[in-house]
Image (cartoon, helix red, strand yellow):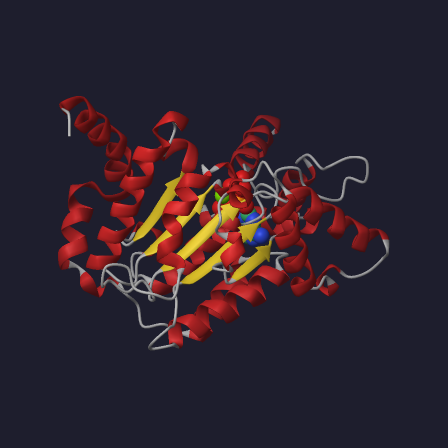
Length: 318
Ligand SMILES: Nc1ncnc2c1ncn2[C@@H]1O[C@H](COP(=O)(O)OP(=O)(O)OP(=O)(O)O)[C@@H](O)[C@H]1O
Ligand SMILES: [Mg+2]
């Protein structure tokens, strides 16, 4: 390989190494094999029920899929989950909940890898190079630690060639004598956010309870929608055709009451005394999607910032 190409390879892998691993984490990969927690269904259920608001479909689907997989001594394929929904509704948050129920160090474990397509693979023209790097990198991680977890953010923006690079690892068969059956792959994407929002809104308009929304029906609709969406990296790759994704899980838009719960949770994180009036004010100060103003535009994103603003305001009013 020419020195110029080596240079490109080095610098494009650098973010993966610095963000993902770091020198100490590389040390961990080889020596800290006992980062795994014994899996406990009750702990995961409690964690999800206490921390996740307004996502009955995701809660049930994830609890079932993760526990079946984690309790299976010989899974036939890796666990592949795809989370869909608008911004700020808990997709990344749930990935972290899963991670902390599997690894002692949770999302900070050196076996939990977050890949953000725009950040790690910024140059479209380098797709072929990234493809090789990604393949080797996943292979290397799973060879040294079979229960590795990969979270791919912004999946809908990801180059289809890169999605194709992941594909061989999601299947039933070993790759070059390495089994991928204990690995976990989670894909995060917004699409089809509008479909999910409109369906939830229709329910609300018909006066039905949100919890009546059927996860399986929505899963089928998400799958169909991605199949028809030509701009989506998923569609352009051949991943969908081979049914390698175990579940397409919908995350619903959040209502005022959920945002209020998020504010209270943030107060607890900050060791503040519970203040329902303040939580109410902060939640109402978030933007809601017009004309019905039922769902928060950014879900529970930026809650800490908004809470901080209100606390400053309260101080100056005193
Ligand atoms: N359903 C929820 N239940 C509890 N907390 C939530 C929920 N949704 C979001 N949050 C809170 O808001 C923060 C931001 O949410 P998160 O990062 O999971 O959004 P996201 O769905 O991944 O959005 P994006 O698609 O923009 O990345 C979380 O860290 C969490 O504190
Ligand atoms: Mg996210």
